Length: 313
Image (cartoon, rainbow, N blue to C red; front, side, top):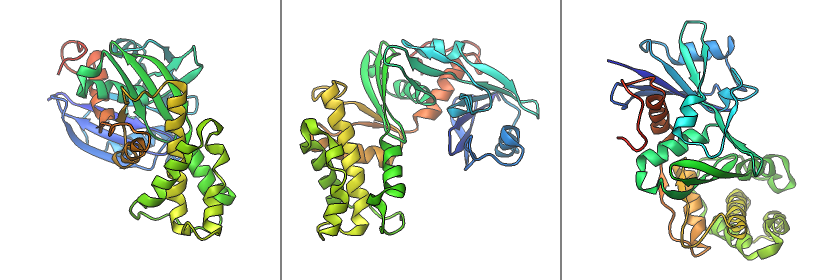
């Protein structure tokens, strides 16, 4: 059997997937070995450990592993960028144990001066799962740096980044808004607090949510917001601001809502927030990275006998 090892290697985590010859994920492993948190021995040691016991196979990696701080810097492919350009831009490195590791390039939008790494693979995976949208669709990938991606005829033609997740972490951990709050827990979403934050961003209109940020603390001090509800209020405020900005800038249109791609719980927050803007419930695609890695590997002839024709299943 022919095997492929796919790596989703970001800043904080490394996820490895073993694909069988039919493209099914045989096993998935995850470690807290992002490019900034490597074990002793660096990239080679991380790869060797996470692949221990797996068969010898081509390795294809996406994400920050190809950044300037990664294993090897891989340049960007300029928009419009499709699966063919991504496959052609793969750069190989050899690990200490002799594995061939192909690193997928990122994508650059030279017009807007914006870039992404890893999300391009999710886009390819999302289009493989929803090929009927390849003609024209806007994708929204929530995360530390949310990506808004315009796709036409199966190619990434435009992108924009909003630092929603990173701003949340900074404000929660390093600002007065997080002072005196209980530690982070895995408790369920406080929907009332979240919805209130979304509405505050929506109703800020042209002034924007920057004028509403301090309300997270003022409402708590006034007794109208419990300390434990502040994080979800702040989350709603920032996600609401992202959607408000998306509407104001033309990225988001009521008649053509974006397709959400990414983590299920985070996408659910965005879908919930969209209802406050009178948008239909946003559709979500999960596990896009795995599908994208397999499709790009096929296009680069790392697996199978012939390169993939876009849209093939």
